[in-house]
Length: 335
Length: 292
Image (cartoon, rainbow over all chains, first blue to last red; front, side, top):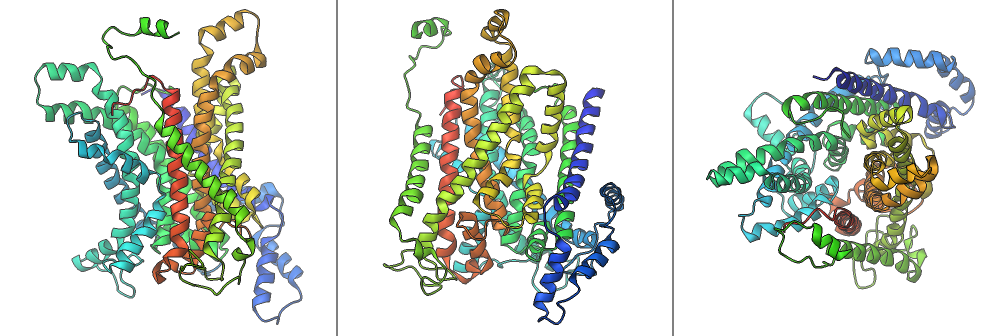
């Protein structure tokens, strides 16, 4: 593999991490206003005016304790040290829970929900898109194209709202939210699994259905150009069966570039899923982020943002490195 | 021109080319126009005080008088909807303009001049493209104290330049090697003059296409941020309508008139923009023949 490509791509990944950490560090310090004083006056305002004096001194004490009175460079170095130890501080609204604990409790739910439904959406969408490019399909199926276009234009979470209305309010088939029945304890058995799947179905469906349109349209475009290639004509001339041409000559070649699209849209998928979790109160990263924003729990917000950026950055990095191995046609670093 | 084109056509193509109406573009533009009319025109007709807190009884179901009922604070939903639509469109428009403006400058510099400039701009773009937009925007928005429509637009614009920069760079790279650019260069036109006079005008169709999709992305990002509660608190936007509906549990309480209207408008915006950008795409890539 081209060494220069690997080095460059690694450099970009490191820069992504540096940028994420730096932004998290700099932005709260760049914007005027003091969050500590703000939080303190908020607290005193809610504690029925018992403690109104001494905010200045308290704020100063906290600043010393958190090291916020040190020079900026020193703070930055300390920040990096904490991040590398995966120490993101404490949750302000659920003290003394640490941000790391809070995130690692939520992460598996997101990986399960978003991972599974993205995969399903990718497979169904790609197959459908491939079929839609095939000249021999019934006319009725062609009518799907405008429908897919409209669906691909609908943001994930809006579809989620509509699904809740249809299948929770109008027909009481699915639970309204959460990842499992409230108050139940989870075990490694079929009953728990069924409960989890029952709860994951609607949020999963919003991601699957909203995603299918884009995958299908993209795949259709890819297939149309593949079907125009000479090797397809040759395959036909050889008298190969339609099905074989479609699956092994068409679909397989169209699918590879589709993987690049998967990499490029991963960020969108995750952003979309964050809001799906909010709508369904699904206890993953997205819902946690929403709660943290509501309660002004800045450390949790920053921790989640950092985890999101670094994990997506890493996934893309791996995909970019693996992709040339899967598809030998790719040229390194061509744009 | 037509005959010259006919001569260069491959012999196998027997069907005469007729000028097709670009239905995608036309229908996309009609939808966008209707939305602007709804928002701006409607805004002139309605009584703005209907959209104020406590204008009516809260949680009234739609009837002949209040077509879309009232929300939890007694605001007329239809009036709020009419006032929200232009604000959301405006955020997309500002963010799209700033984003494409910055993107075009970066893309041109990077694609045309190459060398160190290209190296730096390309790396920065690569880094930012990798980042999930909403994550970075959330950090910015949580730290900005008071958000209004203009600030919202600038927050979203801060990441809107990434994809235009990439697209324009790629196009500039290919334009740079075209014959007429080479000839202009041989004639002693150089540097910025060459870029502005020869390259930029030929990029216009691509800029237009990239503008439409950037506006669409920006609106998507805005609505996402707003639905998380990070939008303008004192101004009407479609995303904030969704946020308040979600906040007051409208979905589970069956108050469909709180969330259905903004969803319909949002879907119309995205479909309109998608049709417009596909239409522009067809216009730009004349080689791309639709097979259906």
